[in-house]
Image (cartoon, rainbow, N blue to C red; front, side, top):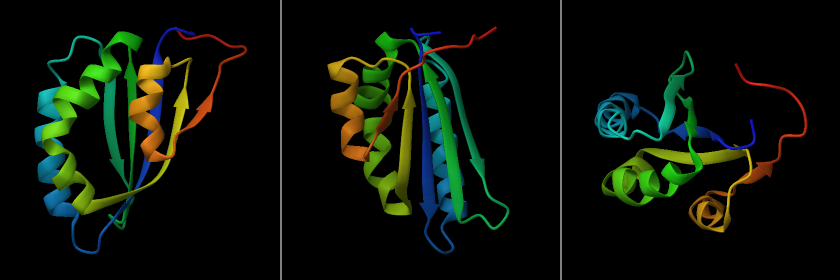
Amino acid sequence: MKKDITCIFTLALGEGKFLAFRDLVAKIVAATHHEPGTLSYVYSVSEDERSAHIVERYRPDALVSHVDSTFAPFAEEFLALVTITGLTVYGEPDAEIKKRLDPFGAVYLKPFDGFIR
């Protein structure tokens, strides 16, 4: 349970920007699909298409590569379409991971009990 890193991003979408966001996300998901250390990567959108969540789960050695290599080419366009309103990180990220996530206002929560099947 302590090894994987899970991130939940909360996003606000600009008015009328969902279709462009959806098309960009399709490209990001396709690129991310090839990362062996990305265990799950799921986008969900509200009924009014004004807010979205991303639930991401990584092996610890894969998150930095995702941010630096896979997501980086899309970052500018992504951030022009949405505002990141929250980021909660579950697990025990190291300093390099925190260096990537801190700029998004990450809140870190450490596991203390439970299990994953």
